[in-house]
Length: 70
Image (cartoon, rainbow, N blue to C red; front, side):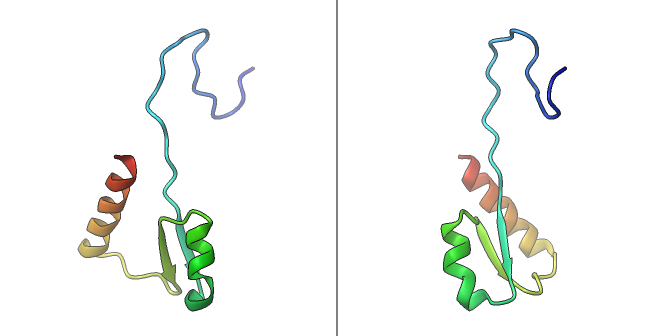
């Protein structure tokens, strides 16, 4: 039985494109934790409460994801 999340198919030698995680760090103490979250791999760091989702934020997130994929 294959483990959950295993996407390999038998002995196939095909390589799929790499998968990258997109991490958003959120902290109530943004001034204290910003550097630590960024050093831990966060692509974006937000304070609490997170910003409201609108067209501008969706565009910024899309740009950040596309930049990471390139």
